[in-house]
Amino acid sequence: MIYTVTLNPSIDYVIKLDNLKNGEVNRTKEEYVYPGGKGINVSLILKELGYESRALGFVSGFTGNYIKDVLKDKGLNEDFINIENGFTRINVKVKSSEETEINGQGPNISEKDLNKLYEKLDTLMENDVLVLAGSIPNTLDSSFYENIMKRLENKNIKIVVDATKNLLINVLKHKPFLIKPNNHELEELFNVKLETVDEIITYARKLKDMGAKNVLISRGKDGALLITENGEIFISNVAKGKVKNSVGAGDSMVAGFIAGYLNSKDYKEALKLGAASGGATAFSNDLADKEHIYSLIDEINVERR
Image (cartoon, rainbow, N blue to C red; front, top):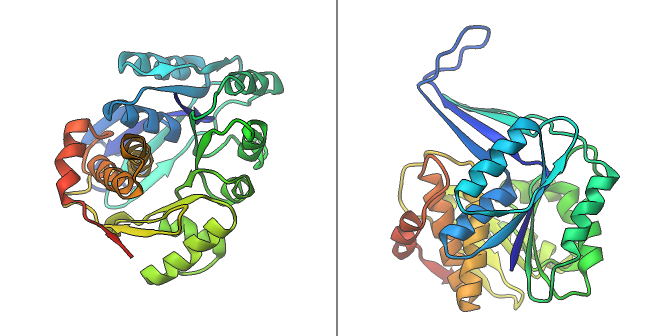
């Protein structure tokens, strides 16, 4: 079974307008509402690719109920814990001449609530896949993902971590199966500016040396780069299309990679399906569907470096 964890999900309210004018009344041209959160996105794309998962995390209030209802309507197996205080956050994504985001905080998570999550995670079994994705509420310590990995380290579970800064650095010594920073996050981790593929490879290798088994670097319009647990380096291009929505593209890549690996146990094929999934979402208003993903497969070329 595949499990995803979204500690701080959201309702994403996406609005489009010609030009955002500060201090004035603005009228939208288009607007969409989606359940948001990196783990949720991974679960939704996995379902499109034929893999069931169980979505774990925390929800609260009327916004939390909305997320659960939408996911059930989409046929997703959700097992969120209901928190008594506050409400699940609303994130406003403004798409104009520039992209602007206003993200909510989310409810406080108590020790009692955390223990309920740990109890669910304790049921995971050997060869299960666990995806720890996204930010955590500011009331939790940056070692939280690390604590989960320590708790599960003797179970032979494949753990995927898609996080930034200390959340990511702290887990590396526990040898996650896969991590997926993008090229900008890689720069931020090492406080460098990366201009070439060789420079990206150098710093991706540092993450592998620090413990990650497989390091996947998403590079936007420049494709993706993978260093495998065997030290192989693969580089993919991106499919052609008009970018409509960058939200969820990286999560889609993670889901595609997991599905591709489970399908074939071949890292090259995993990267190919990951790149197609990320591109398909970038070219869609919402997360991609399987028809769109598979229509891009033949456009993805993966080369060994």
